[in-house]
Length: 149
View 1 (tube, rainbow, N blue to C red):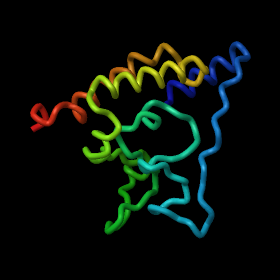
View 2 (view 1 turned 90 degrees about the vertical axis):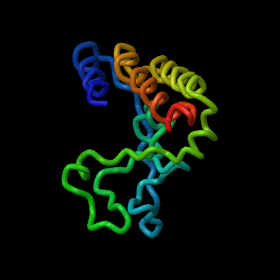
View 3 (view 1 turned 60 degrees about the horizontal axis):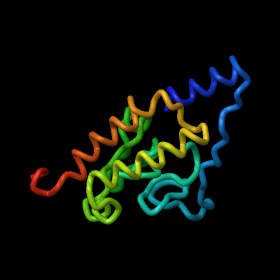
View 4 (view 1 turned 120 degrees about the vertical axis):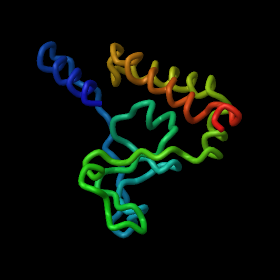
């Protein structure tokens, strides 16, 4: 994400290419704090709105925002409150979303092509980061049960 933001900033300053606009992160009203946050969450527990990536749009994980307090804990550690948390979705959810590794990788490639085409994601980072991560995640979280266990 840092590379993406820097790429957009440099292109804006050097070439006048205005970065793409992302919708604001959705929030719940003050009286509707859910899961320790006012940020509106999708069915997987991820933020709605904001800059999108395949990590959010083709989910394998739930990304918890910084300063989120884990239920039944004393609170987040300092470093975790800066970086947030990444928690794998339950296997039952993953199996419902993706029948196999290939289906997941195909969904990542489709969404990545859309993000690149609309100018949201710089093409030079697609293989190095998102596709490489997707292949690793597919092997780790979507491999057949016999290979995992």
